Image (cartoon, rainbow, N blue to C red; front, top):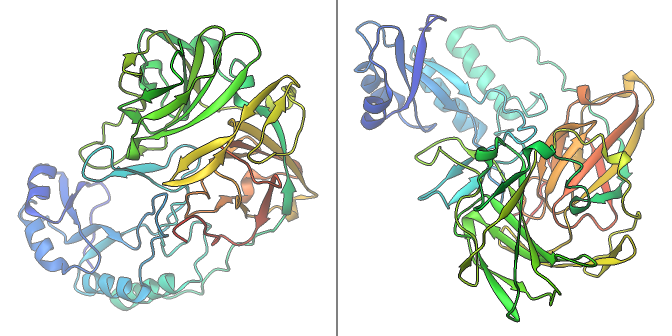
Length: 466
C-alpha cells in the first residue's frame, strides 16, 4: 500500500475540479489530498487529484474517509451501515490506495467546543451535539466491540496483511445511581459575583462577544426603556445564536418576567408585557454562543447581538454587557443567596420572600416548554475509593437546556427538550475518591424531581425527533 512521507504537508480538498483548483497549494512539499462521500467511486477522483500534484508524487489518498457522520441538535442520531462502510474502504485499500479514517474515534465536545454548520444562509444555523461519537468504529467512550469496528478491521487485514490481534475489552463503567440536586442561586442574583468587573462593558450600542474579548459562553445584555403601551414589540434582527429575554421594573421590588426566546435560525419579534413600573423597565437579554461555524462561506462567525435592538421601532441605547464564561463555579457554595425550594412548575416562585418570577412558555426546537429564570443547581455524590472510579454517563431526561459541570470540569451542553442527545459522557479521570460535585446551569426549567441519573448506558435518546 502506498504511504505518504510523515513530513509532508497536505491540503484536504473536495473531490471536484473547483475544490482542487481553489484549495490545493502548488508547491513541492504540499500534497493535495481529496475527500468525498463514502461509497463514491474513488478512482476517477484520484485521477483528478493526480493533476494537482507533482509527477510521481500523487499517492491516491482519501484524507477524510467518513466512517459515520455528525449530528446537530434537533436531528436524529446519524448512523451509517457497517457493511457498506467497510466495502467502500476495501475499494480504496485493496487497490493500492490510502485512507485516513474520519473519524476513527469520534470523541466528545467538552466545554463550549462543539462546532456548527450552516445551510443556504447564515441564519440556517445548526449546532453540533456535545457528543462527537460520529458513529465511529471506536465509540465516544472508547469501546470497540461493535459491527463497524470489526468490519473495518477485517478489511484492513485483508488488504494490507496487518495481523489481527484480540480485541481489547470494553472500558468498565459504573452506575452511581440517581442524584438529588438543590437549587443554589438564580443567575440574576449573582451576576456581579461570577464575572470580572473589569470585563463588564458599557456602550451606546450592543457589542458582540469578540469586541469584549469573550470567545465562548454567554453574554448578558441590559438596558432600560419607558414602557407606555399595553405591550411592546422587541426586535433583534441579528442574534448569534440564542437569546432569552426578561424584563423587570428598574426600581422597587424586583419582579422579573420571562418573555421568550429569539433564535438565530427562526428569528422573530417578541411581545413584551408592560409591567406598569413606576420608573423605567429593565430589559435583560441572555445570549448563548452555541458553537462556532467551522466550515463554509459563513465561517467568520461573530457571536452575540450583531444588530441594533428596537422596542416598538425605537432603537434602544445605553447598554451594559456582562460576560459569563463560567470558567470557575467553585464559588457557588459560598453564595447561598436564596432559600432552597423545590421547582414549582408553571407557577409563581418566591425568592428572598419578597419577589416573584412568573413562568411562561419558551421556544425550544420549535416546541413550547415552561421556562424559569436561569439558575444553578448543585448535587454531591461519594466514591469510596479509587477502584470504584469508572467512566459513567449522566442522563438529563426531564431537564430542558443548559451546561453541566463535574468537579468544575465542563462536560458540555445538554438539551433533552430538543434532543436527540439525552446523556453526557463523564470520563473516569474527572472523578475522584470522596466527594464529587455536579453543578448544572439550567437555562429554563429543571427536572421536576431535581434529579439526574448516573448510568452505564450511553444510548439514551430523547426529544421530539425520537
